[in-house]
Length: 53
Ligand SMILES: [Zn+2]
Image 1 (spheres, rainbow, N blue to C red):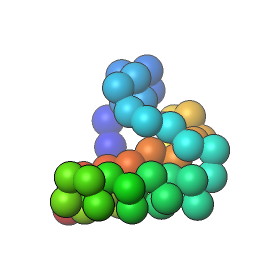
Image 2 (cartoon, rainbow, N blue to C red):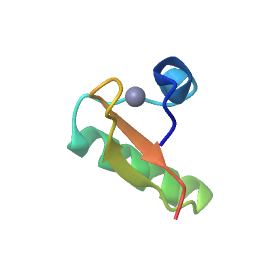
Image 3 (cartoon, helix red, strand yellow):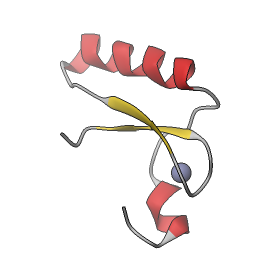
């Protein structure tokens, strides 16, 4: 993880809950065949999606 809080989250979708993030990950998987992983952000305490393995 980076140690630059602002930039870390600036261009990412953010979700209030793991469920919301996972629902969105599922939609993106259907539409683009991209596998995304939901994780809780240590910077903003919201959930983001990561395409990193
Ligand atoms: Zn964040």
